[in-house]
Image 1 (cartoon, helix red, strand yellow):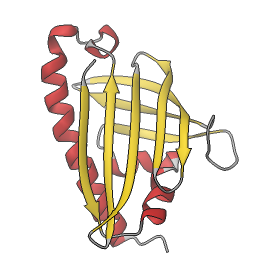
Image 2 (cartoon, rainbow, N blue to C red):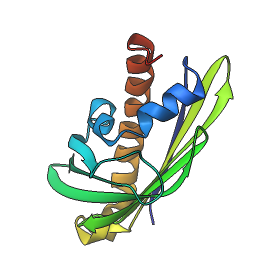
Image 3 (cartoon, helix red, strand yellow):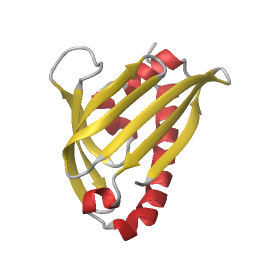
Image 4 (cartoon, helix red, strand yellow):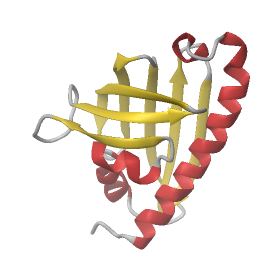
Length: 150
């Protein structure tokens, strides 16, 4: 199972960063592979909440639905895919750091991304996705500094 993990320090408080990350509609703001995203249903986000979206990875487009499996504001949120071709888990861990927040994003994906690219592509996809995740976290950091939520 390919794993990608990257971290960045954001010059915003943990609660503010967590609130932004926990809104499904914000995924497309900072994640360059996501072309659309939003919450399924209404109400506050918590364990059992679902989000849906569309991603484009290595030229392939995928629709997905995730469900929040862990929700511990402002420290940790875990979402797992429950519908779609991709089998993945996304974990965000937040901790105070350098007057802001260290955000660590970990993506655990099924080998071959559900057979879409094949197992031999795992290393290539993991490297490419690692670069993308790092760039996405840097975009997130810039966005939150330029658009304070507080």
